[in-house]
Structures are given as structure tokens and as C-alpha cells.
Image (cartoon, rainbow, N blue to C red; front, side):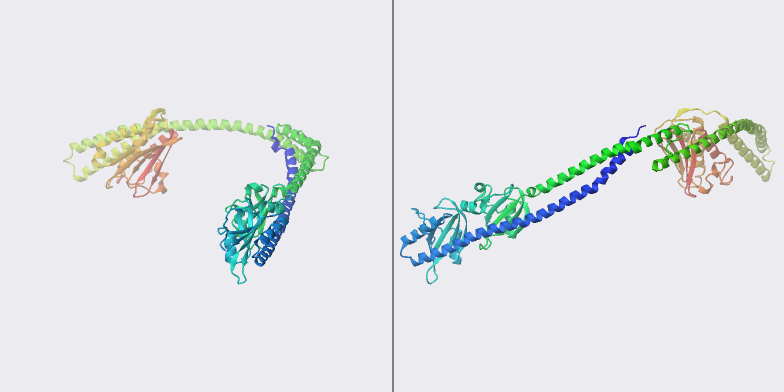
Length: 611
């Protein structure tokens, strides 16, 4: 069978080349990762620096507004009786600083007093955060994002108190800054792709944003991940999700002079920062791949010329040797490299195989001669053994059969003598006659068992379907009188199954085991016998268990031998042939018999037959 491509030398060479490129690939990736980490650190530092610059820019705007408010407050206090001058002064300032949306003053109750942009409505600012703060602190205060009631624009308000000479709060001077101007001045400058700038106040309201100023300005997002991070950490750099749902590296810092009431954030997309590094990584991997492909092509060509051709020669020689051509030799012995060493080893092996083949042929001829002689000897010895076996069986049968006639005479005449001359014999004479009759009866049983054992050896086996459960019930029924008389409890639990076995042989084996169980439970209170069976895929096992006297397991093999007994004949009758018949019958049916026992706790005998 041809080897698969993955098990060839060619594939292993290619695999070696590929594996050798892995360290270079790992080094390329490691350098790229180091560059990424360095780029991320630089990006964090640059982003935080840029954010601080923008925060300082906003801080200067607020500081300028504060200075201007102080100036206006002094002008109003100085010209408090000349309202027209004060309004004119505020209008001039509004023209000079177009990024201010309006300049106005309020009285101590928050009512609109003076305004650079004329208004015919009565407006009260007491509910605004900036008014509450300036009234409470009597110092410069920053308000929250609002939609101007007079200017109708998105604004953030700065306020400064107007106090009299006694320091009593008389009202506030207010500058509102147009957030769109703040956007244009601080935020609206070129941004890298996927970047995001924003200014938020302490309430999480977006004061300015780029891109999408119109979409975000004025929105309160206190639960946004970015806003929560800024309000909790105040300053730093984090890779988190922006208010637009995009992950970026965000730097954030508080605006100078706002006491943490306003923050600037700047987010940069990490993918953009990694573009050049990724491009370099792809280029290096591509060059490594090209080099690997060129190395593979070169290895394929040179490997075929320098290695595979010679390997094919070695394979061809090996196949010829495997087919019995021990004269085959590789023509590579002049080479001094590894393949030349292999060729030399094959040449030596072929020479040894050739010598071995010659020796083997000589040995085979001798073995054939010895086998022929051995077969003749075995045939002669087998014939001799069969003749002796037949003679022994005939002798055993003849002796057993011929002994029955004189034994019947002894039994008959002793019975007549005992019956006819009973009164003339004394007690000792009658005892002698009884012993003669008992000996004759024992002799008769022994002859019967010998004949049964002989028949078991000589008779032809039948192969029929046998129901072991029904067979057991029949044997129990034949002994019903004795079982009832001795009050023996018998439990039978044999699955419904049919075996292919010799009916007489199996019946004889079970009969002997049942008789032994009945015999050896004599003198046992509450005698009990259990007969069960179990079927497996390969065999059927039947067992007979009793609670009789049991036996020592060290005599296990002895009890199955002919004429072997463990108990005295005076205690338990028997000939010592019954279990030998059991083993012989099971062996002839292709099964086996064995036992388990503990002295004084009963015994279990097993019969196993092929299923």
C-alpha cells in the first residue's frame, strides 16, 4: 500500500522548513507587539498633552471673562446713577468681544436690570445655578449649560457679584458665552480620523463636541462610561467607550480655574495609531512567506535529486528482499553519507538473509524427515494405546458384569439363610449375615457406578435441545418422598433456556449433584438446597448449593477423581465415583465442573456448558 503524503520524507522536509520559520514569525510578531505597546504609550502621553493645552485655552477664556466681569462691576458701581452709560459700555464690550453672547446685570433678587441686548420682557434669573452660586459665595461663579431666555442660543454663563461699599450683595454682572463660538475656537480644528473632542461640565452636560456639535451639545449624559470616568478620576488616560459608543483612548483633564466644574476630553482611535505598524507587520510576514515558499520549492527540487531518487532505490531493493530475492543489492555502497550507510546495512542484511535461507532449507529437509518418522511412531503408539484402552474397557465391563452373578448368589443365599434359620442363629450369627448382605449391597452399588462410568466413557453422545429447568424439576420429583420426609427446602431459579447437550449425560451429572446435596445435609437443622442458573453470551452455568457439611478447598481436585472420598463410609454411604462421573460427563460435552465450599457452611457445585 502506498504511503500517504503526510508520512513521506518529502512532507517531513517541508514540515521542517515551515517549523524553522516559526521563530522568525514569532520574532516579527513580538517586535510588532512591542511597537504597538510603545505607540500606545506615546499616544496616551501625546493625547494627554493635547488635552491639557485645550484645557488651558478654555481656562484663559474663562480667566479673561472673569477679568472683564470685575471691570464691568467696578464701572457699574462707579456710574450707578448713569444707567445709560453702563448699558452703552456693555454694548461696546459686546461688539469688541463677539464670542460673548450677551452682557447683563441683575438686582439682588435675580431680576434682569441692564442688558447689552435690549429686551422688552421681564426676566428673572433667581432659579439659575450661576445666580445661586454668586449670591451664596459672593465670588466669581460658573453656571451650567442653558438655552438663553433672551439670546435664544446655547450658552454657558459666568457671573460676578455687585457689592456695595459695605460688601452687601446688590446683584450680579453676567457674561454668557456662545457654545458654538467655544466649539469654533477650541474644538473645531482638524482632527485625525475616528478622533473625538468634547467639553463637559460637572453635571455631565456636553458643552462642545467635535464632530457632530449639533448632535451632542446640550445633552446631559451623566451615565455614559466616558462621563462617569471623567467625573470620578478628574484627570488621566483610559481606553473606554465614548459617548458615541466607539472605543478610543481618551485623555481628560479639568479646565484651569474652574475648580473641577468643567473638563476637556480628547479621544483617539487606536486602530488609526496602529495603521503603520500593522502595515509593517503584514509586509514582514509577506516577505517571510515568500522566502518560505522559495525554500520549499528549492527543497522539493534538491530533495528529489539528492535524496528521493536514492531512497526509491533502497525501497526497490527492500521489496525484492521481502519477496524472497536475497541476491538483490543496492548500488549505493560507494556513498559515505547516511543513505550510503543504510545501503551498506541493507547489503549486509541481504547477505545474512541469503545464508539464513540456505540454512533454513537444509533444516526444513531434516524436519520433514523427522516429522515423517514421528508421525509413524505416533500412529503406532496411538493404535497400541487404543487397543489397550479397548481391552481395559472390555475388562472393566466384563469384570463388573461377571461379578454380578456370584454377588446375586451371595445376596440371595444369605437372605434365605437369615429368613429360614433366623431362630436357630444366635445374635452374633445374625449380625454376621447382615454384614454379609450390607457388603454385597455396597459391592452391587460399586459395580453399578463402575458400569455407569464405563458407559460414560464408551457410549456415543447425543446432541439434542435440553431444557435444564424442566430436567431439574423431573429429578426433584423422583426424590419427592425423601425430600418431604426430611423436610428439605429446595429453591429452583433457572432461566428459561434451551441448551444443545447430551440429555443422559447432563441428567446423570445433575442427578449425582442433587443426591450428594441431599446426602450431605443429613443431621443439619433446616436443610436447604438451592438450584440456579445463569446465561451469558458464551456459556450457561448451573449450580447446586446446599447448607450441609461442606469440605476443605485444599481437596477440591481430589473429590472429582474416581474412588476418592473425604468422609467415612460408615458416616455417609457412597462409592466415590459419583463426582468422577459428573466431571467425565461435562468434559465429554465440552464443559467443565468445579466446586466452592467452606467446612461446616455447605458447598456449591457448578456445571458450565457452551451456550
